[in-house]
Image 1 (spheres, one colour):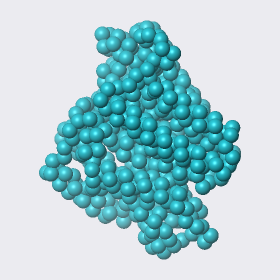
Image 2 (image 1 turned 120 degrees about the horizontal axis):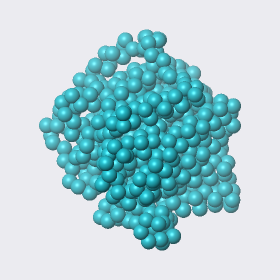
Image 3 (image 1 turned 90 degrees about the vertical axis):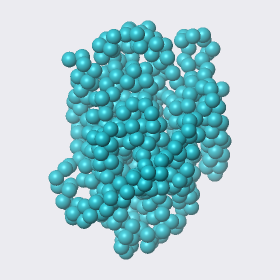
Image 4 (image 1 turned 180 degrees about the vertical axis):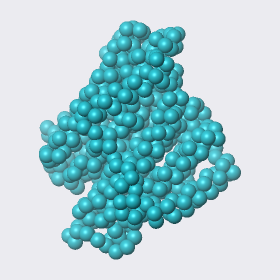
Length: 527
């Protein structure tokens, strides 16, 4: 019944668009998504024992499109269902049309299909559909700036996916298959030098979806568009970018971890670049967007270390990042609405103005910074467990940079007196409860991190007391350093004057895509 998981969101999207009245849309959407979470949970529980598989059209062998829910795919499907449930609850009080609901559930269906498919070309089609749907959601309010940024986003994605498509064509010439498993069997017997060109083409498209350096310019611009909805920014940063990471994992498995050392270096550079660029921003959504790039770099580092606890720690960090980053974007959306600004220097006294929203924002901040005993602490503990001495220090420096971002940029918004607050804003309990729920999950996934990882990966996971205490001490020292450094970096213009965020034109972005392709060719030893 795996095809039902892809079809169900599409059916409800059509239903909401064609039949639901405005008053019933919210109830139908929340009810369906709750049921869908239950189904996704059941799929995950089944996949822990035996992967589920179906050939669409019931063609034998590799002639049809295969859908498979192994443990990794089921985790991503469950994560998608939960995040969409939170977003549906969050936006339910907002004035949105049936078209918005239609596009939202179509996007969910395409993401679920992407996580389940085992066909390279089918993945390409689903990526393109999801890109078009995200573009329409970004341009939904039809503001001039949004229309321009949305079209730029669409055109950039069209360009990068041509690299992916050309790579598929070349791979098909070499292997005779578009099915991932069949192609993997042939690739395992081939000389690696023959795979350099298709691998470089495919990974250029996927790296752009992950927003790796030097392809990191599109995500911040999408998340910081004036007037864009926080829910869409949350989905893009929390889930859409995870589709790129998911494909990165799959392609690396199929090509036998080709160029892992190069991606280790790219991940480190991307992480530090994201930290530096986040520190140079004053727009609260740009800060979150660049911190997402830093976390993606960290995840790529963990995935490139190779096997063991580093791999499961990286996957768990993908889950955790989706949870606390969605919570942060949704929470910041409430804050920006109350203060009528996204300028972090103009937001003060959040605790005095709204303690509930303040707590809802603080909980995911503790998660993303790796504070004990929150979820980011556990995933970063395992992510770094397979790293040697130099790399272990680099990973801790990346986390120190993450702490620094939130100490410098976010800590001041909670303190002081109220400023620029709208006087006529009433508490929205739908929004507050959805963000608080994610914050509580951040805490729960930290306290019960090892058992939850054991459930997710169907293996015994343990944390040593000495290792736990060591990470607590490292976090305490890092926090102290960041609090001292924040006094210097909060001086107006002190850091932003040194480093400016890139604002590439469309042609500049195309040049960066070509540069990454050249880097990939060098990495796989073609030249």
